[in-house]
Length: 435
Image (cartoon, rainbow, N blue to C red; front, side, top):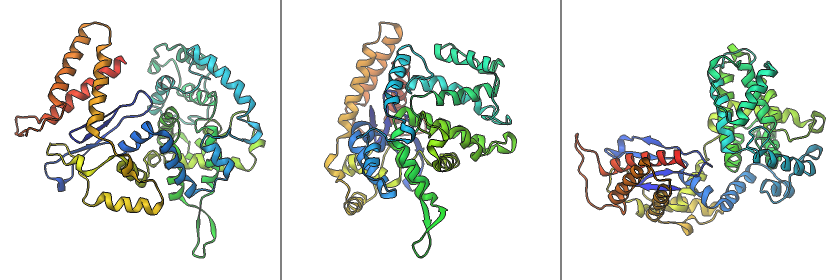
């Protein structure tokens, strides 16, 4: 679900995406304040038109790396992954059956990745962020008995106080690796395996056009940004949490003795290696996978942003400057001639004409809020439900359809947009807790 309020954009998805926004104050905009999520339209396009979004992203991935027909079909999910040692074929079928049984039992370990599972495992990540100075973190094994007790608690959903002193940092770190290793497939998925190998081979060229042995960091970062965009949402969300943890761990290598390279040796088998393979199956690819893992750790802070041209395309796919000619306090101004210039760029690149799929933001907002109101209305009768309904009715009647009246701001007044924005955010947050 997405909401456009006085040109302030918010994205709310049902547990399959991370919602975020930033506030930007630009002196050139005088009194205007911009509230936006830089990747709003990217997330919107991915959520509403996943096939078109995947085609757009993959077309740019193949611009950077060479994927033969079979490998491209595997990346697109049109063929089963062909992996070293036969991983991902018949053994994957039986593993999927076992994973389904575990999921039905409500287990976290060994089950397919879900947002509920991530919520449990995020406790481990949060705890480890507070213990990054422990020497040998992720390398030194913990106590197997304590780890089993913690694993059972996570599987059963029991409330856990990791700060009680019952568990050591090494117990928690080892259990995190165990969780990743027991996933039905690696966190970066089987169908992305060949793409990651090709990304690790991206090298700079010298002045004569000859390939060097120097990694092309910019192209590698761009390719990873694109590849991460088409990961399943739970995988992408957990990967972001995990890489940030490993990045912060490597920053304290003077204390914990765990560099990005050392961490890559610990995590590449769980995140990148196909399931049911041995080191001999991978042969010369082991160094590529380890180096690729180290690269992701070092550059993790750049990898979860959509490339600028993807943002532009997604924005133009929906946005018309006339829709955003608002007089209210919260604006998302479109630069003059921006659309014409960018359309020309996209035509030169051979991309689809984004103007062919424009939608009206106001209609989507009204629909989204009606759905939200209905969700609250269907809640069990209670005093809280009554309060929610009263609050949502007030917001609906005050803000929608959009009021055309001018609102004068002073030191003692709050603009209509600001008031509605505050109440709407409150309603969304409270409703999410009961959804």
